[in-house]
Length: 220
Image 1 (tube, rainbow, N blue to C red):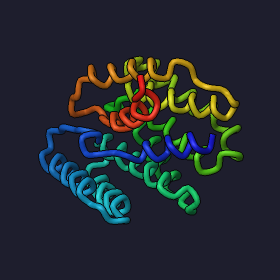
Image 2: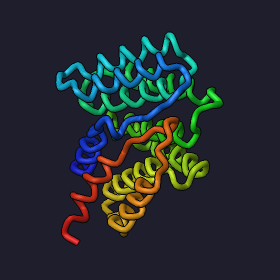
Image 3: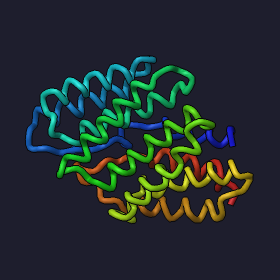
Image 4: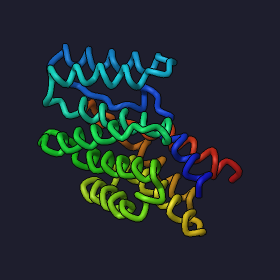
């Protein structure tokens, strides 16, 4: 269970710029600021890349508080950063991520399926930090969020992928094994391939999928 949890945490922090949220808005200044921040993050190899990107996105948020994709990106990076050192006392990151998720929920322009996917990811991060304490309390919240996400969009590849990862972890914890992993990953791969990349939708998870396919399905 610990090995699987560590592996999934590792691949969930592997994100590249082509896996980031893409956005298009009428305001060219926001578009430029948002893209520039993500470009700098992608090209930054220093230890403080997450801190710098989050700070820049927060400054953008002060000017454009109604752009849900910016708040989404802040929460996503905060969750990712919390995974990098699970022993660090960085609960403030996840607290702020939850505040941003709640803010996005109030935005009628937001993609609600993506919001619930992100919220499930947030609860997963809390479990990863304190498995014994938070696992029994929060595993139902993880499932509920992913199921809500799929209720709004059954073809959401991120919701399907993260749900499968969590089911794999739960099966490992119970000393069992998730069935038909490769078949499920193949189905999710098709969802990613068929996804329409409009600029208002988050777009990440494909690198995580590739890592899982390499680990579990390379010898088919």
